[in-house]
Length: 274
Image (cartoon, rainbow, N blue to C red; front, side):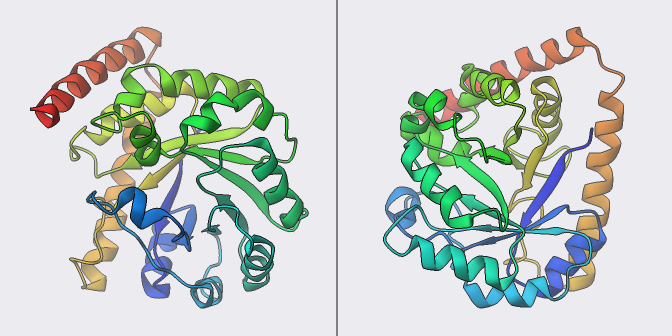
C-alpha cells in the first residue's frame, strides 16, 4: 500500500508537473457556498476555481485522475454535477453534507458516470454515520479535519486524531470496505505536526488517501516552474521513501507514534489556547 496523493490546483502547467512527479489525483475545487462564512477567519485556501478549469486540466492529464469538489447540495446541484462530469471529472467530492438524503441525492445525480467521494467534515455526518454508510455507491471517503474540528469547537485540527474521533470513523469505513483518508501533508520533516508522524498514523489506521497541503508546495509564493518541479520530485520521493520504511514497523512502533502524536498535539493545542 502507498498513499494516493492529491494536489489542489487549477493551473494546467502545475497539474502536469504534479502528475509527472507522482501525484495520483489532481484536485479542482469549486466549493464556495458557505465556505467564507465557515473558514474566512482561518489561514486556509478558498480556491475560487471554475468549471472551465476542469476542461483545461483534463486535456493535459495522462495518468492522474481528476477529482472535483463541488458545492454542498443546493438547488443547482443537478446542473452543477452534470456540467462537472461533462467537463471531464473522474471523481466528484461532496463537501459539508449532514444527512443520508444529501448523499443519496449526490449519488443519484452522478448516476454511475463518475466515482463518488464524500468529504466527511460535519459533526452531524459523524452522528448519522450508520445511516449514511448504508448508501451503497460510495467509492471513497476523505475526513476533512479542518471543518470537522471547527464543528467540534476544537483548537487544532489534529486533535481529532489524538482524541480517537478519526480512529472511530476509520473503523466504520473499513468495515464497509470503503477506501478512505484524512488530512493534509507537508514535506517530510516539516509541518506544525511533522509529516512523518501523520504518515505513520495513516498506516496504523489503514488510510489510503492524503492531500499535499499548501505548505508542501505553495505556488502562490513560488512561481518558478523549475523550482516547483524540484519541490514535487524531492518531496514525493521523500514521502515514498518514508512509506517504505514504515513497512518494517510492527504494532508497537505504530503505537509509540500514536502516543508521540497525542503528546505533540496536546502541546500545540495548549499553545493555541494560551
